[in-house]
Image (cartoon, rainbow, N blue to C red; front, side):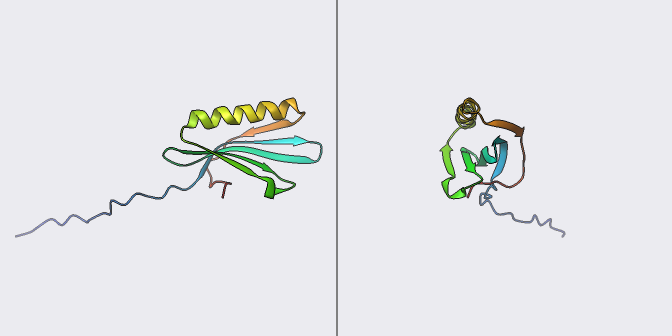
Length: 99
């Protein structure tokens, strides 16, 4: 008698890799600053603000919903533009920039 053997698979959750869903790079004079939204998986969204001249001053704000993170990104971008920063726009699905 022939039996079919079905391979067993683990039901452990996969650890999501961070992915950048929105990244804008701002320039003002010689200064450069990146403002990005990253997802770390289901219900985990980060707004990352990275001043390139001093990465120790980087900030990461955590949100449970994508709309909240995108709204915060828009607020930050608006304030930067009001302060004279000029943006380059883009998105990426590569690994994230937040720690």
